[in-house]
Length: 120
Length: 112
Image (cartoon, rainbow over all chains, first blue to last red; front, side):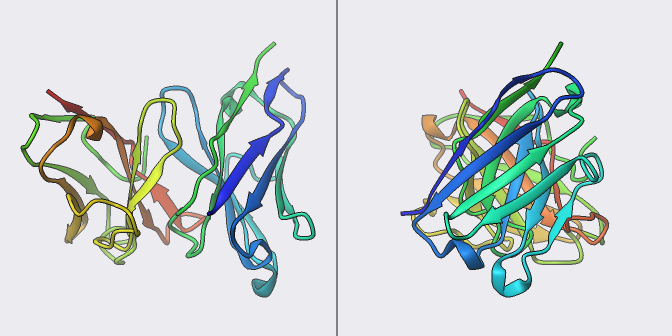
């Protein structure tokens, strides 16, 4: 059974940093494409970034609003995905979901989500 | 403003069928058969219910079906049940996006 469990969320001040983790199990993590999708309160879904699997070079791509501030990485030895978020603004307040992204355009498994609140 | 356009809300009575539309452009919905649909109950994570326009993942009820015509994709739910009340989002492969994917703004389904 595929499981994705996010951790590391919380309250942070504008300009601050936060690192989210996603522990994966139930599938071959090292070759899996993984994405972070966020949902601001009462709003829709937005993919903020993706990391390809080891076999595809492990490269990353980011949405324009977070490029240069967010970094996605992975530790394949621990089946864990990370999202490093820097220079946070109130616009980054959202529930962040870790997802599998096998095709690059469809998210088939989702974590339970973790809330990130950016507020002074 | 979302890249794909969905109605804000739809409603139906138990047992009825409803359809939710998702309108894009030739650069996304109209150009590729890579439309997905997600169901999200309040406070829960989204769940993939349709991929590649009309395919259902294992375990998803056959009451859910997808189709596409031109730049508009549609999700039809037949035999409405109370548990179908949720938000529904479409997404599509999109050459206009740096991440090759865009979402719709979501549709709130109310079962009367």
